[in-house]
Length: 389
Image (cartoon, rainbow, N blue to C red; front, side):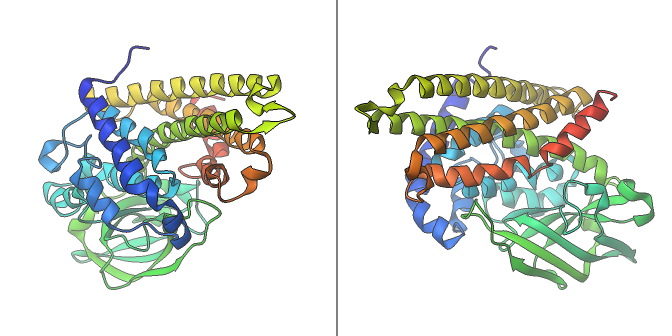
């Protein structure tokens, strides 16, 4: 496949890598311990043009194509904290694309542009305590009352949730219509009735904050509804494609970094008279893992190419073929990166189980990939439907 990257993409990639390695990675121990990275990271990413490289110039972006976002996501693992990369990807690629797609000029000025600049922190509110991958089962309601909507319910697993300035929220506006009765809203977190119920303690991704949110008779003006009423599920299915494919690109890059670190360790670590990387078993194992990762990346890039064609060339909705490719990529990448993490930790032996080594953290962090944005099981079910099975 010809390289999709131009000189501008390469220069942008260098900027992101320098940001990750010089400004973020040195804080790994501190931010992982504190279970939070500071807000200046969002602001700095905005100043460097990292968050909005793939957004139009009229909303504060650089007007680039989606490959700029891919380059960004592939460099984020270099900060050595998946939680930081996750928080930044939610900001630029998960909570905000739907605003760019269907938001009004006023909504973009109030929410999207400040998010691109890092002046406002964004969160995406979809999952609920009793509705994760089964989005149609959400129970948070938004009832029309004059010129307002009154929202009641709760959301959970919300990245950036403890410090977000606004939440891109999915709620039921017509509960009797199931999935086809949902709508999107932009919710400023200073609104009366909005509460952060608690900060959730996670197995991994410690540097990012994840919250449970509660809405109690929270009243917002109708102008904060995104798009048409009761079309939220359709908008979400489109938005999911950006979330899933950008997560795949970052996961592949994280897998490559784990292999790189493991092989470097194997050159230095000696056992039974020679470096352990010289053992034929492990040489063959790393060859096989590299082949699988290359296949995962190729499938992911196929999904990116299709997504870029749909959204940035044809400027249309994501096609069914693109959805299928992205879903397959998420399935395959999840299985491959999980195997890479497990084998890389095993290769480190006892040291792989010690927090001092990055592989211990990476092993924990990557496990979320097969859950977030739609579980692997849900993806298989979805692809089976697309295949007519």
